[in-house]
Image (cartoon, rainbow over all chains, first blue to last red; front, side, top):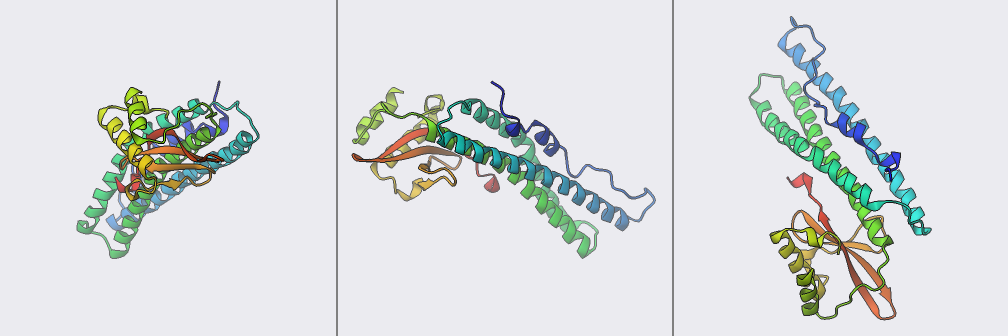
Amino acid sequence: MALPRELIIDEELSALGEPSEDVPAQASPQAEPHTVLKAELATRAARLDVLQAVLKNVQKKGTAFIDSLKVAVEAGDTSFNFDEAIAYYEQAEASIRERSLARIETAKARKREQFSLPASKADRSKAIALLDREIRLNTQTLESIRDLRWQLMALRAGAEPVSGSPVFSDPRELEAYLDEL
Amino acid sequence: MRSYRMLDGLLRSQTKSAVIKFSKDPNTKSLRFKPLAGVGGIYSFRVNDNFRVLVRVVEDVGGTYYLLMDVGNHDIYSRL
C-alpha cells in the first residue's frame, strides 16, 4: 500500500539537503571584499529563508496529517499502514542525519573562525547569526522528522489491540519473560 | 514490546534494565517517565540518551496497567 501523499517528504528532504552556503554571491568579481561579504551574507540569508519555509511545510503537512489520523483512529479506522509510515520516516531521518550533523559541525567551526577573519563588527555579527540559524535549521529538521515518527509510533501504540498480553506483578517474572524474547 | 527482539547486546541489556527498574517504580527519577504530547494515554521512559520505551497506560477495575509497546531511537540532536 502506498503512503498518503501528505506524508511523503522526498522533495522537501532533497531541498533541505542542498547546501545553504555554497551559493554564488550576487556581487561582481571586482567588488571590494566588504561588498562581496555583504552580498554573500544576503544570499545565504535568502537561501536559509527558503530552507526554513521548506521545513515549515514539512512540519505543517505532517502535523495536519497526524491530527486527521488521530480522528480516524479514534473512530475505529484500522486501514492506515503504520509500519510502512514509521519505516519511511526512520529511513528519512537516517538519510539526512549524517549530512545534517556534518553541517552543524561545520557551522560551529565557522562560527569560531569568524573572530579571526577581517570583517566589521556588524558583518561578523550577521555572519554568526546566520551560522546560528543554520545550526538551528539542521537541528530542527532532524528533530521534526524524529517527532513525526514518534507521533506515529504513539498512535500505533494507542491503536493496537492489547487483550491477551502477558501481565506481570513480579519484576522477576518480567525479567524471565524478557530473557526468553 | 515491538523492536525489543531486534536490539543488539548492549542496548538490549540497557532496555531490560530500564524496564525492570520501571516495573519496580515507574517514578524512578532517572527514567524520566512522562506523557507524550498530543496522544492520550501514551507515555515514554528513558533507556539511555538516545533510546526510549513507549508505554500505554490502561486503567481498569483491576488497577493501573503499564503496557510496554515499543522501544525506539529518540536522538536529542540539540545535544549532539
